[in-house]
Picture 1: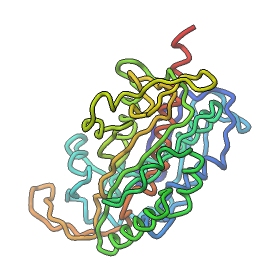
Picture 2: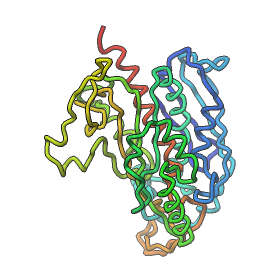
Picture 3: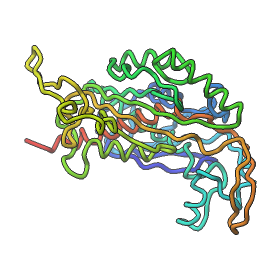
Length: 354
């Protein structure tokens, strides 16, 4: 379980990981590498805010081994620019949480959206990296990649390939798409969109390999429900589907059902994987597959009509340092949240039977 704290332009952000078993070797280099995939300023198609995003662990680890007690950590903010947001103190940005936070709390953080900022997701990547280290003991791997940017689609066959192959190919380009042909077009679109002062969205696909059958709770905490909740808690996420998803509405049941077979080792599998590796809210031993839709980033470098706190019509000027497309940096966040969900349910499953 993870809880986080901190704001976009505050002193630091951080989190507390609770429930990590004792005895887990903590690979600090691996965790930092995961953070580096999410950090700002990493390429010309991401925000140019410069943050090292160096994580500092405060508790729960002794000599590189988890102690079983809460793991506390912080990531200091090094490149705050509150002046970039001074003009927003009395106004509501279209697409942002300014208005809703004010209605809920009676105040809002002007600088970078405060708690609503995607900067908070760095904490999720730290916790997700710890979860990945735990899942390695079960040979479970989680791999996400950019499937589409606006109307540019990667080859859908990539979801059928091994996670190791996806990983080695997606890191060869700035977009984190394993399809080199599509990635080139995606990057060109993002660069042109940035020049136009606009933003674009798209879809991130994710696959969980080697997850054993039997993981997930049967009613309210179904595996797909927990994954959906986790993914839709990510900033800018607008949709979730698993397996064949919405395309399952276009076919017959005879086409949808995954036929059971047994391989040469008498292991039971399914011939297809339209269910996305989940039946009745519980994993069936096939790879768990899902897609997450992300909207275009709300901050655009164009004038927009809005109102101030008094309801007066104003014209909002776009300024500051922002991503023209959130997807390349969201890939490690999707992986992190998926790893946390599977790790939590795997631990819960230990008490499901004698």
